[in-house]
Length: 232
Length: 85
Length: 118
Image (cartoon, rainbow over all chains, first blue to last red; front, side):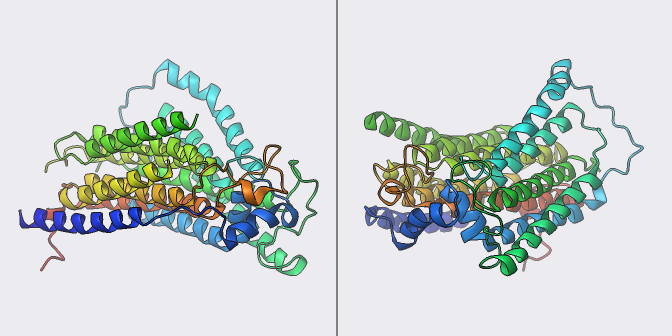
């Protein structure tokens, strides 16, 4: 009971703090200096129509490199933590077969889901969306295959190869920016092209495609590892 | 138009808080709890759309409410019988 | 509208922390953390919102020339996008550790794990 009292006390303090923050908050009517720079310079300097994409891939590209590294570490640690419970094969569980609807539907839908994911990350510099969203959509295709047939042998080696190749190419493109353009992960190693078309914005579509493949592979391997552990 | 958006935002907020309250209730069964936390994420993604953030809305819908819920269910199916207390 | 969203975010943070601190079941605690992180993201997006402006995507409706006066701040959105993706990684790690702990002790009750308690 004392514990609950402490929790309530803590929450009351936090709530008072939040209330003061909310009461003292007045929204800006103008963009601040950083926002103004991004809004006015993105189109000329980088050629990207989606400013959020430009920030993620180029202006704060180092952040994103760290982010995919964190995801890679998370998926590796999950593999390490769960490695004792992984199925070694040979043992066939007596699962009921997935319904006709799910197995047929997954055959129909998986290519379409993969296509949608690729569309989302290739068009990341023009429309909402990008590598992380597209990667999650790719992983949901893997999830659908997994739901239709939980014992399906997944080619985890292929997933690992996709992940490490795209990560390596991402870093190579970033280093190329130091020598050819203005700095690490600069997108102007390729011509900017005409603004608003798919082949524009320099290296942003390529980098975002690589991020999408890497994130999709990481999420898929996370899902696979968590679903293929056996029940002791 | 603006009033409509305001009413929609208010409605979303009420449902979100309600779903969050369901999600932390000690007595509920775990599948219901996981589904309500997924519902909170899904409604949050609509809220982001109203706040003019389509990129964040897509990410939240695909990752926050889709993949997270499935991760929870995968683990839940492994830990049957441990739900005491 | 931003005020409503921000208040909702703060309330979600409080609810999530309450759930994480009062529940003994580890899966329920993780659900509390997920709800609190959703609340944090909602607050951050609401801070970047400005009345009467549109999303930071330039197209025919928002020409490049008057982008400065027409779009909202893109920086909080980029930060929240990062935060959501990292949040999934953190949640997956917590779930994997929960599963390992369940395998060692056969229970999800966190008060049964007393090895480091003094």
